[in-house]
Image (cartoon, rainbow, N blue to C red; front, side, top):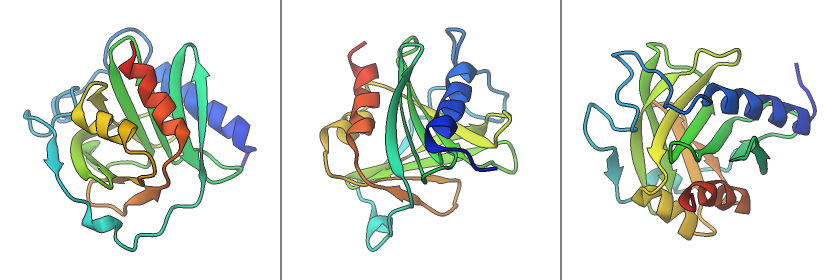
Length: 184
């Protein structure tokens, strides 16, 4: 079912925001990895380059910024459709939540975030909500977040496990949402 972009964005953002309410990070099971976004119990895995961006087409859609309940969020998706990717600042925990439409067959896996400056692989988990979504978190003060905020004009990409990379254009909505956490 397709709804108008504002209604779809509001619905998806409301679900994402409500799933993070309560003052503590989302509960995880033993298979989903640490809540801090690390992979396999260690630090998030970083790479210095992003070769998959060469020649990669941009995904269909645009960014929208919204504040709901005092929390900043940027959502990307095609017109008149559900958001395909959300960057949500959880000011209370100082975490940035990345929510991608989709699912992981085992319930836990990885989410790879890519910018023109490099990439980072985070532990991810299914949210088990009404809409199939995968979520990963990263501290708002991380180097990767600083790079994305400071690198205007860069593209941004996300992939679940070894899936296809969704490549999105830079947009002020990304910086607004991420700066909402950095200035807490």
